[in-house]
Length: 252
Image 1 (tube, rainbow, N blue to C red):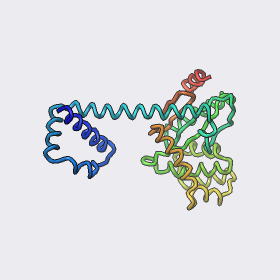
Image 2: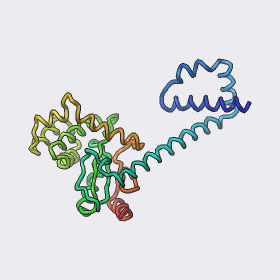
Image 3: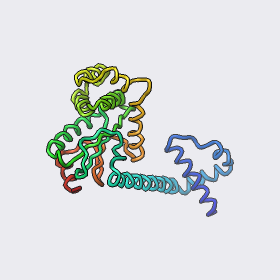
Image 4: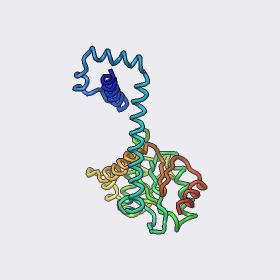
């Protein structure tokens, strides 16, 4: 009975994982369970519903441990191999003496627009203390202009005008669209043909670069914006300047 109970627990755990992830039970696994055994499993579940809770808790604990390890590895890279973490992402002036603040953001997210104002204040007050690194995390499922705006900003970065373009997008967040993207490029004296090719050309260079940031966010378990990493701390949502300054002071 104990061996059967362990088998049943494993079967339930696999089934729950499939349900949680939106999958159906693999055909091979399903076909290997006879109707009689399936009825026995259901009967045990009725008598021992705590098995379901235990299986879910075990899964959640494993996921949390894996996420913790991934984030610890990322923070280690941030401390000892900063150039690889920054990659080709836009950043303000980088110096060894500065604390690095990594931001995952979405140009259509209203909370990101509020955070943008706070970050502007932070950089103005602490210009020699903080390096800001921008990572794209367009929430495509809920923001239809998030990806096009990110692609336009990426294209502006190819001509050395990311931060100016970035500021313009947040300042005109309610007008996000093709007209704004082109008008902003013109106002910054960008090469329009190159801009349009980089942002929306058939080579998809912008989208491929943005996908790298999205994959990093997924790896770190980030599912909302804005999200920040500074030193060994991470925080999200609309943040007050005083709160970031406290984290900055602790990081020194």
